[in-house]
Length: 114
Figure (cartoon, rainbow, N blue to C red):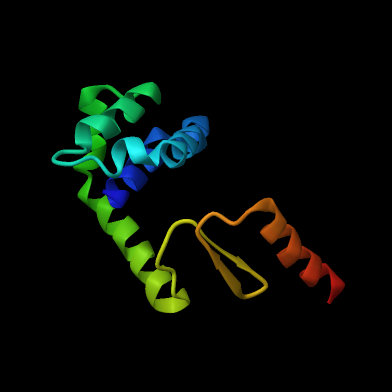
């Protein structure tokens, strides 16, 4: 399902990409944890980003795009130990989940002092 959401964000293109990613993260519980078939819930977000049913279906059946995303995800996991989204690296130190501004400030302050 995460791959499908990533595919949708990439297909959105331009300014719609970041807006869709923000909406998907902010309301993740509305689509990512739906029992049975989550695709209709994901389509609601796609529709808000300008997708028609046809463009939504075309995006989610793009095998090359899916393969590229899986390849990138595998490389991140194998090479850098990324196991969740979001994951940030600050001067080689991994931060996972949703760090607070205070945690980012602490990480950058330590970096600036060195």
